Image 1 (tube, rainbow, N blue to C red):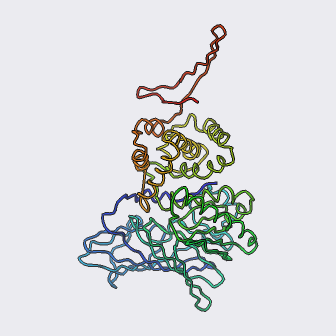
Image 2: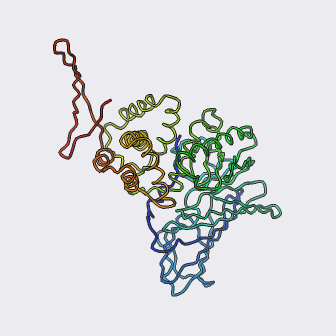
Image 3: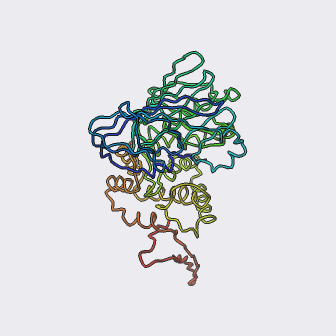
Length: 454
């Protein structure tokens, strides 16, 4: 299982630094699962002389007010242009989003979705919104969300602080998340909430009533991962982490929570394996964002710091590395994909490169610089790129700074070449002496692989 931590939509708006201070959008929505639809308002203040292009794909906009006056222009190709204005200007957008097309989506149909990919779903009593449900700003921005639901439903979104207020048959859920991000996710379902406080972090499980017995196992394991990765990676980025159950078979990671399918959560090995992977995405993917245009480093790094680490701790590191190599040979040895060309794990070939080969790259990098420098560089990379987009360039910069090594050659051969070393071994006997001669078969006019032999 893998996480994904971020939608590919982010790649459309990649920005490493801000030309202006991050904008702040306030969203208030009312969710009606019977219709099913949501009605909403989104408001933001635009500074003077600044132009903002809102992505409003999939939204039915009923009214746009600029300082309480109707806006005459209409969205063009899903983009609503605003500004520039001569003074601070307040914009309010009224819109609806209909989910009738999702209402008849069966559990079997959702199972055919690519695992880990973002998609809106409505299965039985649970709504999951990960794309095209609110106006999106072009750069990393602050989003403040309030969700109104029926009293029997619980809303979940990215938040350091969640407050809830009862109002008759309704509940008002407010999600405070102080960090700039590309968009917002929302889950609404009939959950029981099980929570504990571990020092300065709230840990929670949002479970269906029939699975409440899972709470203690998951809470205990979250506590373990929190302590483990604080030692390895540094302070946890947020004030909350939650495991949220879903009817659909998802494996998605968001800032402050992960969304796991009901059948997956019931598997006894998930708390010891996949949950840790999702937890690591709190650092990489959900607080250091992926600059997709320059390659997705996140899945391979997370796999190495979670999936591989657990095998190494159990004394099974060599076997796990062999499995990664076998997968690569089986699915990707003839593929025209470099590590920098990986964007998303759409199939076994992509995953063999983006997860497997990239995890092996980090293992080789660890051997190149040593354990102490490796983890120090990982922590430096995290600290310098929190709540910003980052690419392989930032990773290289951190490792070169810590190790005082020039990693240009390492970076070129393992990130930009689309192959791996092809070795051929022959035995030569000379009298009583037997020699093993290893020949690298694949060469190029640019350079050959530099490989070490143990």
